[in-house]
Image 1 (cartoon, rainbow, N blue to C red):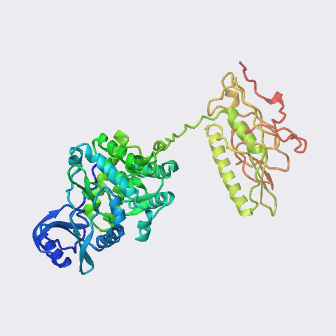
Image 2: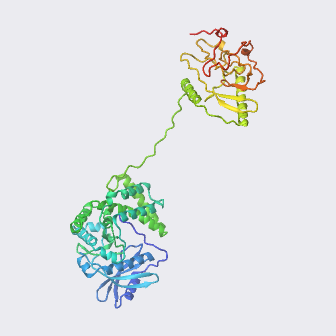
Image 3: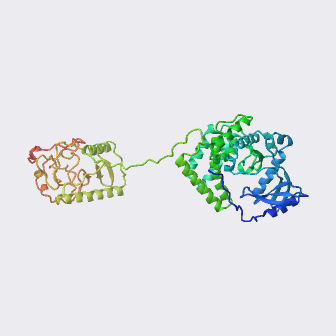
Length: 535
């Protein structure tokens, strides 16, 4: 991955200056400077415009003009940093540090003129091809920066972070980048895992350049002659100054730089330096995106989004460079929920459910209107059941749940639940065809047990049922009650059914309700039952 490309335009109100205009500004900033030649210099095109000029004495100078107020403030910071380089500190460094020769204020922007140092900038490919001594010199120069005394940073009132403070700052920046909605989720998870990896962030903070890359390294005679761009000096993570090496395609070049750095560095180097450097290189894309959104630069935003998508594809295809000590967890895959097919109900399961429900009956509302509505509903169901039975439509449909006993005494509306134990199903019995009375059931048909004694038949026998004892004298046949339900309380004058099974005489006596068991089949006079051929 190459270093972040920089759009040419940063702000719409900036007026581009030509190299000749920059030379004129330099002559105003440095008394006695008479330019005789000028040429443009590469720089961070989003923030600065630079040129190099030669005076009448043959001395060279560098001019740097900011494009917006933020860039101008960075140059003000660099002025403080360069003034902090005392002659003793400069003598310890393996490269030259430029000095500020003069400045010119133009509205809110300030142009700076520096004395020029020998050397020229090279691209990454040119650096790799420039010889084996160049990476050694880069490692030594980086070690010299990191060994600078922290007091010079404190004296300039520049930022200083501990390892934990630096990690927390990155987490805050990650949260800010996530709010844009333009960061691929895979990258967010990858970066968050690395920032939460505590072992990765055990390092000793030191003075760092903060913006070290090939454009700020001047090379002369196959070695680093000067380091420029001191606008982001701080105390922080030394890995930040190695992030630019992640883009080097020749791994051996980066290995030589790191080996030379370890050799010349005074303090021990932590083993996870390059992992954090790779993280810093990736995370710079998110910072570039946030910066573009803040500047309302759509070209900058589109460029950042494109690079983020390319990085996501690279990580998905090749795994990316290691940026954490522990391996990141695999992405969570939402479980597939399959709808379970409903299991067919069996006779035993239905009986068990009815028995469990009747074992713990629930009190029903005692409101009179609700009871009347319930009775009307039961009456309607019973009427429909009797009409189906009379028309040869078969037995009424079974009612799920516990049986409901409705009591409608004078002045009361009361609903209670009577537990009913379902008769056990005969494994060898078969069901009579719909619409056939019990006397015409096919061979092997078991008409089933009679209903409980406390549940009176609804004035008629349903298809497939055997005649049972008549209800008590004080309970009139309802005529409309569904199978398994009974209406008790007041006498009912409901008409009797015209079913032919109901035209025979009734027994003289009915079982005593007080003596009848609560559950189980009632006793039946077997002499009155029709003869059924049992197989």
